[in-house]
Amino acid sequence: MKGRQILSISSAAKYCGYSREMLEYWMDCCGLQYEQPPTPGKKYNFRRIRTEDLDSFLELYRKRHRANNSLTDLSRST
Image 1 (cartoon, rainbow, N blue to C red):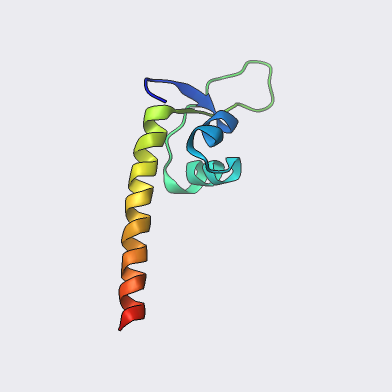
Image 2 (cartoon, helix red, strand yellow):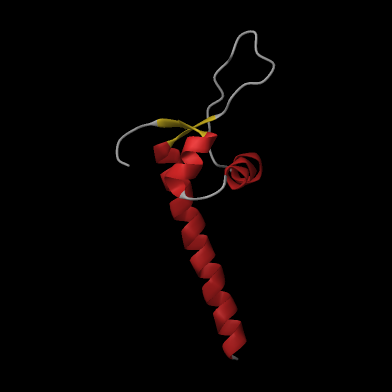
């Protein structure tokens, strides 16, 4: 998907192929940027994720994951 979009967590999960729970973990613990627009009269605010923020985060996540797997593979071969 190209262009700027703001997605709900469920839509973002479908967009990137990761679970909603994983996205929530990344938002809470790993620095995935999100917006939380005010919802007057509601108990909970809903978080939204910009596609460009998600794409940037996933690019870094995949680079780190590949680097960690490479190091693991090297240690197994010695």
